[in-house]
Amino acid sequence: MTFWIITLLLALSVSLLLALALLRGSRIRSAAESEGYDVQVYRDQLAEVERDLARGVIGPEDAERVRTEVSRRILAADAEKRGEPAESEAAPTLSWAMAAVLVAVVVAGSFFLYSDLGAPGYGDLSLERRVAMAEELRASRPDQATAEASVPDQPAPANLTEEYKNLVAELRETVATRPDDLTGQSLLARHEAASGNFEAAYAAQKRVIALKGEDARSEDFTYLADMLILAAGGYVSPEAEDALKKALSLAPRNGAAQYYWGLMMVQTGRPDQAFRIWNNLLTQSPSDAPWIPPIREQITRVAREAGVNFTLPPEPQTGGTQLRGPSAEDVEATKDMTPEDRQAMIEGMVQGLATRLADEGGPPEEWARLISALGVLGDLDQARAIYDNARSAFAGEDAALAQIEAAAERAGIAE
Image 1 (cartoon, helix red, strand yellow):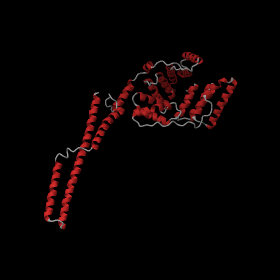
Image 2 (tube, rainbow, N blue to C red):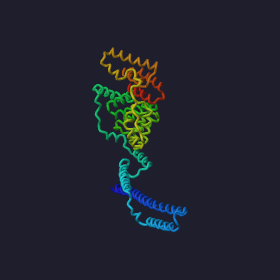
Image 3 (spheres, rainbow, N blue to C red):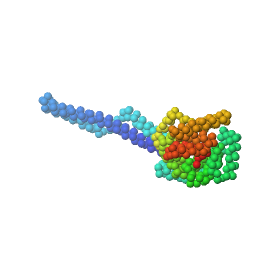
Image 4 (cartoon, rainbow, N blue to C red):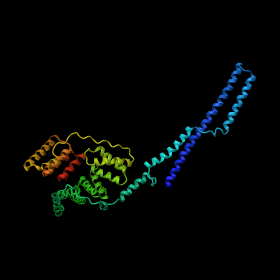
């Protein structure tokens, strides 16, 4: 309350000073204009008398009498100018109206701007102080275990069949007896995530990274960070930050890792850095990149918090070049066919796509679809060969490689 009282008094003081200056200027201007006009008329009369005398129109006696009368009037006007009548003259009604409007605008406008831009109850925060507060928040934020403890238990995905649950359970038992099986640990990390068991998923992914050692790739650390963040309900913990650092050190343009790094900046009070990261991803990533939708949902708010005048660009129009070839869903849909027909259809579709990509090339989406389809078929050797060819074809193109790596992970052949 004290703050608002002081603010009101300051706003009133400033507006009243401006209003008084306006009114005083109006009075002085009105009186000065009237008195100046009278004196100028009298001076013109004296000049006219001198001209008439020179032409002989009037005699010396008449000229002297007129001079005396005009001089008397000039003296009277000068005395009135120095007296109080001019100071007590009322200001025009318009000036009072303008003064009232000025007071209302200053007082009401100040409160409106502060209510929109200010933060009642907070002192002035310099940029240096805000950066220091953000660093302190980042250094003292909860760890992974604390964050997980605060997340309510989530039900398992509704689309899990009993058969799938039994297969995952068998996979757990098998991997438990073979802890150094890299393929088994990779499959376990993916299937635990698909089952909604993110804690078990990141535990398996940690084992994958340990088994790979120096051969661990940026995507391995990104997947670990992804599981940690999901287990914490979307919170980027210090443990997830460490995984993201390693992912970005191996591939600075890793889109998923950059997105999560921007999310961490938002959560730790640095929307300015988050906006720069996300805006670059928004302009440089393909429209179907998985991090684009969450960025579009949040970047306008983040820009506002960062003090950036930003307009979200329209979503790119779909309907360009359509992907050709089977998807994993297409392959799954053939389960209702007889085994012979299904196998013939799948093999024909896959081989047709493989031949066309080998002869004509194609976008990374089609290579990813081919790898996924081969994974569903169980032809892992050919899937690995296609995977290696795709990595060579798109070497240096991080966005394309991210799609291909994701398909390889789904097929269970990622290195």
